Image (cartoon, rainbow, N blue to C red; front, side, top):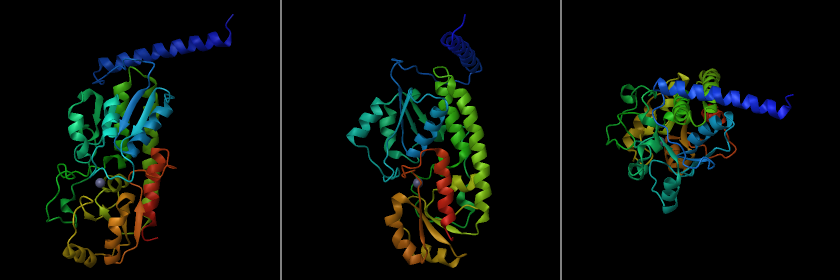
Length: 317
Ligand SMILES: [Zn+2]
């Protein structure tokens, strides 16, 4: 007679056979492009992301797959540090060496990582801006915002806004790339990813309903919300600078003032000090948003994106 324990064992075996079949299916269709087994399977996979929003997203996926014991996901940058100008400390380099997988956006955002990552086996890095399916917002060249000054090319990768994780569709693409990498080792990720994709689509629709209600006309301090506004299907926000450290000329400020009046100056938490003076000169209220998910109460990607939407809502409120 079957007791409960035996029953569970049988179910588990059936499930793992199913998973195996699924893994083979994925491989034969060529979807899995890289697979590196952890040499010691009792050790959790050490995943290091460059910024916290990526950690939140991958943590959502892993939690949904009930694989929290199998993955340790850490973030390299503290939220108070801007990825645009950061340099690695010795302890950061050690973290990079110890990681089984490094997830980063790419050279256009985290220039400081390029040299270290060149020394790694490329199979053990996931460069998000290199994923072919990533969706890019329309080029800014045809908007009112005009940069005649030197465009710092570390932020202006083929004219692309590097803050790609702010589009939930890109979050889905990132989760799928992570799933492909580990699908054979952890087949539970496949179903969890499918569910996550659905949730991300729902999240987009919910946030879109929230956003157009506002007549606000925000001015962004550094050009970082292109992916968000494009996902929300709202007009892109003009920005004061392409990169946070860029100097802003007085004439540019005056030009900005002559257009349609802005409701506020939006600045991410790491650049508030810098933005304060400009807000004063432009006579605009300063509203901060949490670009790098520095608020530790935010524990999921969903909460993160909702917080960005809520902060934008404060502009002109
Ligand atoms: Zn930025």
